[in-house]
Image (tube, rainbow, N blue to C red; front, top):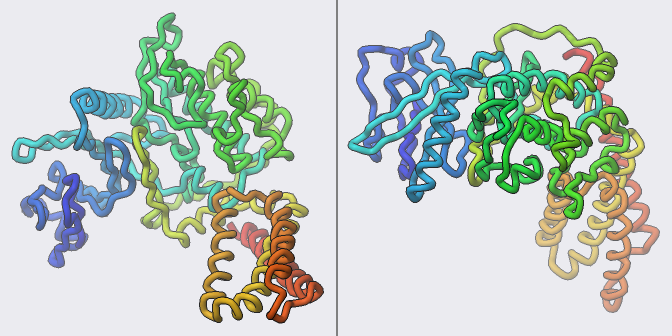
Length: 488
């Protein structure tokens, strides 16, 4: 069995114990285990066994762990406060946020769509204090990962997201709390039950009262693009601050683009509609009001958004029966991202992501307009054909076989990466072959002396074949996806 050391900076945190297994680790007579490198106690609070790190931020790190006091070693998430390199003010702020998160989660965690707080404790190791928070493990995928791995969602999907999450947000606000970090990475859909969860209360702020004339001022903790203007300025925060974050999240779900890329710096408005031409106009108006820069023009509560959403909710497809069978325990992404500093996300294995994507949200790929789907696929294949001809002719002569093939592979991977990261959208994939073709013609002119040149007709023929071949593959994938959905 492998146990991960939770001491920050441990040079060899992985500890192997061949004699331990899922049965012996539960032995109550077994004493404490210590890191073989630094001597740090490994079984936290005598109960929680860290397996591997999941995410690291500015002042915390989270681990996937096992609870040795449960019959099946139930999985949980251990979040540890990290204070290394902090000055006195930073340390005080980090402790305040961590303790606040624990206190708020103790109250909010009884909502079925907010992970339960299981434990909150401090360990003293040779005079050094370590702070831990333990939460329920959610077996699912974040909306951020869903969109990046698949495609922007349809209007119906986004309406459903709002319909299921707005009551959760109202629940939080009714208890005089503001989340302050609503974003796609902090919303997870369960792999089996397809329940939506609101995650990461590391930036949560308690205010005196939702109706208080003196709301609390905001500490400068936010995610650019998803934070309301008043929050980015360090001003007072309101429930409407979270409404803005949820609206910005909807923009990302519909467009696949971070809202800060679409922000108009002169008006603070998000110009997003051109990137979601098929959006429901009523939904678009609701999102625009949710993300209004002015508090006076923005929704003041989640219930107010729900009231305007009701006419659209009635049009949602009938919900499919929920699979209530206990899911097998697999290593999927758990998203408890610290709100301060850099975030390193550990993505779930691709085959496990596929299990989620093949479920309810797999319909999104079939809701991409067919014309755009085919044209962008053809554009990708066409320019790949152009580069292939260039590499196999001029490339062979100038660089040799292996460098030319490596260059072609690099171009292929580069195009895939740019599309994967939404740096190139479908329109770019349609337009870029024209630029590539012009570039290839320029190269033909520059290198025509002394070399046999591929004819333009040959260039076009090969590129057309590769382009139509790519379209054929994409259509087969789309049809396969539609068939797969019938069995899920």
